[in-house]
Image: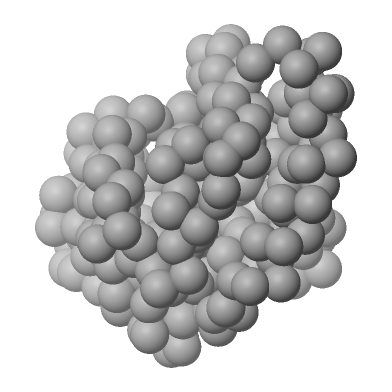
Length: 242
């Protein structure tokens, strides 16, 4: 969509966004422990950082959320004893995620998974600025938490979110694609960062009741895909214990 058309539609888009926010049910973050251990074998420390999709909004428990599916699948695929920690909060942008980890000071980890971006789109952060903030987050995790590799989940296909009316859905979808493409280009320039594309089905049956957040099928597919990538691309038999 051209900039001129977006500007022409701006009053409608603002009205739709406000109306959508008013009618959308406010779902809680998933209940349950935000750290744990699963599997047997050599120790692997995993840190998960992110927004509502990392926090498990849309399902009842962390077992059903991203952290549960990711840690269990990673333990099985890598044959490791996975010690995982979740640092996440609904509604945060990439810049706010950096502020959160600086406050929480998570335990050292070998691998970090970052699930962020939709709130950057909502807050109209430019793709270039969001990449700068992701770089700052990755650099902090490397320097302060001992992370050797940061895996960024892709932005979801926002253009298929059932909650969003047209043309807001199309505009936000276009913006999300631009953010994800910028993220992928940047990640390709660094050896310590990865962007993992994931094909997701996003019919109403895959989503949470609000039509905006993931349902359990999306968390399962995303967690399993990220775990397989980490196990096959980032974990080696000779990796040093931490």
